[in-house]
Length: 149
Figure 1 (tube, rainbow, N blue to C red):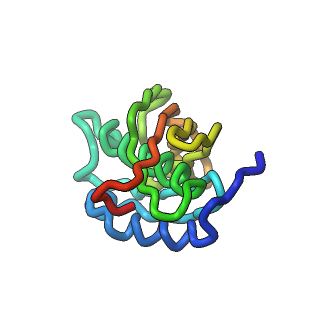
Figure 2: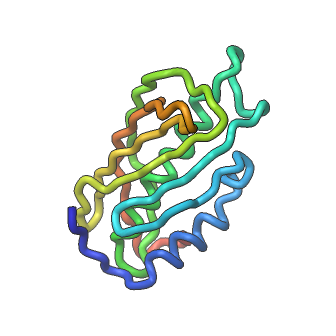
């Protein structure tokens, strides 16, 4: 799907914003790819991010795929706009086992104020590639506020 890019510096803006996001740093999330309408964030397994059964905690993986969707939306917003999630739904499809994970956020429809995104969180590896969670989210462009993107 071809998207309209409103900010020629979208990639630098997304990367700078991600670098300021302390929670992603706390989780160890890494921004891998930024393209118009699509962002990929990776995460490695860590013992301090698991739930009681040893799987990656749903709160950790949801946070990462939410950020991927939010930043995918931001790639298509005009300069000066910031992004906030206004709602999302997550379907947990499989236990988050493995050593490496990839969250992909994609814009489904970008509007002036609201952008609908689809997100996918996968366990990846040489012998496995499993969809762990799917997200549908709505992101809002915030303008003229005391927010940074």
